[in-house]
Length: 156
Image 1 (cartoon, rainbow, N blue to C red):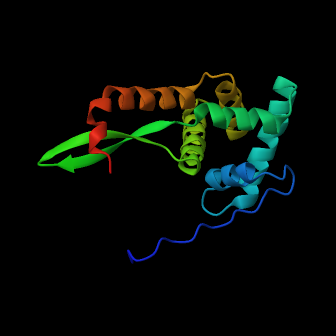
Image 2 (image 1 turned 30 degrees about the vertical axis):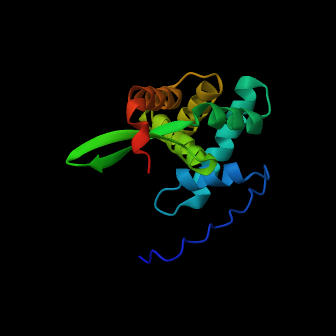
Image 3 (image 1 turned 90 degrees about the vertical axis):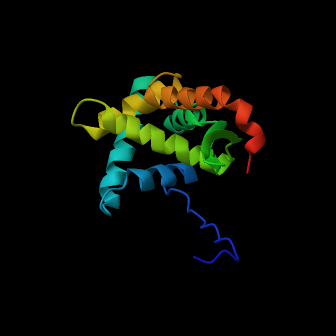
């Protein structure tokens, strides 16, 4: 891979129903084995369930869930003189959103049960209420960064 230029960012089209890029990103993350129509069915059914469960705008609930799960800092391994240090660093907005979506989906997949719609619904509602595994993962990441802030002078 060439180190001369950075690759161009792809422009993500917004979703046809909710007109949101966040929704498109989440559907792409749900996607398995190229079955986009199945991913869309799962997501839209989950959004209907969220609306029934919370009686709020499901897009706002999703945005709040992603915002709550987005980390502000993370640690990155840096090797110096034979030792590996966990160096805390700030997370850019785009990466933070990607991490939040990844954590939401992995937490939803780990929940017990067979119905992905129900698992995704519950995880999004929990994240919007600042509970759930995705929020726990964010807090764990923040704790790790706080514990290793002595190594912050090794930043990249």
